[in-house]
Image 1 (spheres, rainbow, N blue to C red):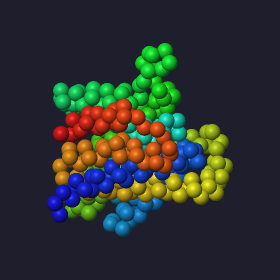
Image 2: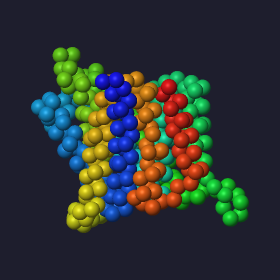
Image 3: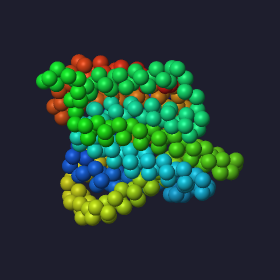
Image 4: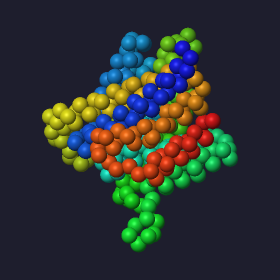
Length: 309
């Protein structure tokens, strides 16, 4: 089917838009720690079930120590730090601004890829960084009563948004290292296992993330809140929706998309979430959206596209 990869990529952007809307609702009802524990536990079950279906094992096969170390570090930074910041940003500034700040993830990935992996930073990539930051600035900055330029969002929410983007980007670089070690450790004749490396890596990262959030919850003595969250059926339904459309459908479709079209095209189309989320945020959460914010989101996505073209 012609343009099948492009259609899948747009489906990923839609899926992540739905995920963000569900996550905003669940974060506000259940709490960010509670949502992360529930979401990652469900992710482990879903991804583990996928591994069992194709390999006969619920747990990832042929992992070595280097694989586990790098993917565990990726899970800690990407899930524990990154997702904690992301879901807190949803509570403080809403999912549409939270997703806008997620366009900083390619910036963090490119920068830390340059530092850790020695990857080349081209002028086009640097231009993409500046354009993305300009688009974000256009959306979140405005004139106050004193006619000075300032943030129109809570500073804490903005910092959480930036932390989410950086966590996602750094986690991606570390997971790339971990998956390279993983692929090298798999026997050549086990092609079926090799094809599932992204899923197996997601399992390891999610498991580390879940452990991290459980430890934080234990430190804060909040285990009793899980029982309260379990009785909030609307919140639990939103948590389930965030899990199904995020780590499960979103990740699966993204892996399929790059098989049917160029990675640059797929990545650019997947990055449309900050634009797709504008109307649903207005419709479901009654959030006012200005022309300036729409233009800022479009510019930010155009900046992201320069990383992949």
